[in-house]
Length: 311
Image (tube, rainbow, N blue to C red):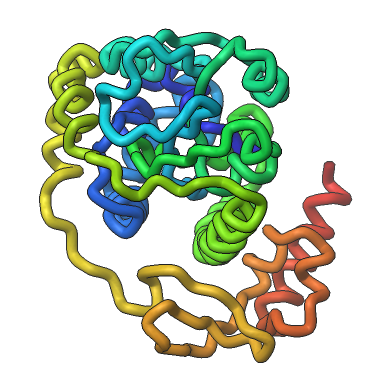
């Protein structure tokens, strides 16, 4: 079981291209509603043919451009820039459409490439920008938020076939229940990462004309999605989606008393089930502010212990 960038599957499972497209989602909330619903289930199921069981999506944050040369205010500022590109045909096509020069650089070499001038700019979320240290060499972070491509949690289909139906249900439940926890952790880290970048001297460019980017990139959809069924999926994505209950929507965190705290100030008690606990690292399971339901915890522990003995 592993969490990987969805771009890895773009060439194998074409349905994964849909959430990878630029400006396909109106906001983080919109992205979450779509991926939590039938469209998300359909995309996860499409990985089955390539030997993977798609369990759930994990947010990776909205991606924006950052540069060592200066602020990026509109798509015109991208012309001629050497921009680090992910190993994805979509990224290459979108950067070319903006007039940039895509340069393939492994992620662990981006800092060196920026320092040496091999690339002028790159793109990532606040979390990626700061954790990789790119904020120290590319000081201008422009809030283009052009992509909200998620990560995906996958399971080997071969190993999956050896699990009992009961164990499969347990794994699926644990994965699904871990999503809200992971979102809360990411939302919290994104805030702290931005603050850290600003304090270290990064310039946040919030006067970005995002429409100039969208006007160039959204017309690429037919080229990137030759399958009519996938183009129809785009239309479904853009349909209004029902808003979930407030306690499932928006940034959420667990406070020191085990309560779920939202940006709007509403707090609700969150009792984490045992299946969610199994999806967390042991250190997280031992944190005093995480309350576990003993019945579910004991039941799951017995199942996982039995599964481990059988393996």
